[in-house]
Amino acid sequence: MALKVGVIGTGMIGRDHIRRLTEVVSGAEVVAVSDADEVVAKEVAAGLPSAKVHAAGEDLIADSEVEAVIVCSWGPTHEQYVLAAIAAGKPVFCEKPLATTTDACLRIIDAEVASGQRLVQVGFMRRYDAGLVAMRDAIRAGELGEVRLAHMVHRNPTSTTSTTSANLVTGSMIHELDQLRWMLDDDIATIRVSSPVADGFRDPQLAVIQMRSGVLVTVDVFVNARYGYDVRCELVGTKGATASGPVSPVRTYRKGQEQVPVSPDFVVRFSEAYRKELIDWVLAAEGGGAGGASTWDGHLANLAAAAGVESLSTGDTVEIPTTNTPDLYR
Ligand code: NAP
Image (cartoon, rainbow, N blue to C red; front, side):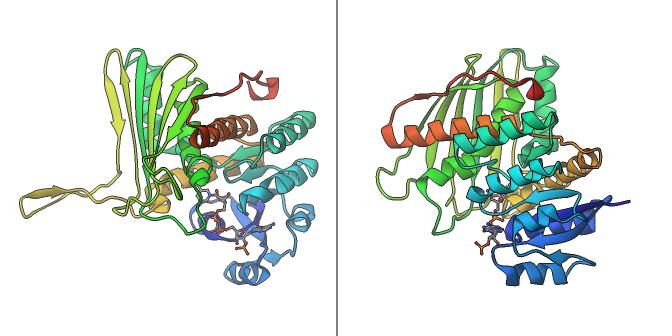
């Protein structure tokens, strides 16, 4: 029997996950959708074999046919839906960010810990990227010796007009903030974010991060880089270095040049990672739980992002508070 999934938020990524669950990933069926714009939700439902439309996300979660929930609505609404899913005892995949404030993250953690089991998976899909997984495995196998430095690049061709300077940290760099913790098995100690643009929309930005182990990291985020979507990571250790770059199976040789295409966007660059992420979630949700990045991971990424936003405005290096990991997330 296929897992019956309800999707809240049928915007860009919600529609992409629905397509993936319907056409690519087996073992799941989208049976209900909900969106602030009911017309859009009805259009999406009309393209599915059998999906009903709920006016409110809470109604979708309460629907007895819905066994598991995907939250792809606007960030500030994530908390209410994740809390409702936990209260209903239903596994929930929540797109990043887990929530938009520290207090909201802590409320979700308290609710999940009280439930006694992991029900929430946060949408940090880089944890499923084959190249990044191979780099993490290389570190764990000791192939790089002690990792000392990491250099990361995160560029988009263009941003929307509503994107703010803070969004570069809370919406884009947050992927690196989670990736670092996951890849290095370490927590972020301090962050300093600055920009060559002093006023107005501060794009690009450069973060200098120190991990608790001492590893030093640079992250360059540029959301109007024009040339394409470009995510890179280089790790430098005492025995070697490893790097991931734009993933393309094709190289073209013409006019005296070797050309490698750059991805147009994250949907293309991380399509395999999104697929593996959803397969993992469906399997975990069928068993009543969650895989991938946890609520705790979502919270720590948010704490680092909040410190990054503070640093961008003050110019100071900001410390991330130490936290005791609840047993559920150890
Ligand atoms: P989007 O295209 O704006 O879609 C969000 C949708 O949610 C819109 O249709 C919006 O309706 C709807 N919505 C807003 N408030 C709602 C509510 N209270 N209940 C139900 N629906 C509501 O945004 P998106 O790019 O898909 O992003 C959605 C989420 O996914 C964000 O949290 C974003 O950070 C995350 N995301 C993650 C990745 C990743 O790589 N992991 C990539 C992209 C996005 P209106 O338009 O009418 O407001």
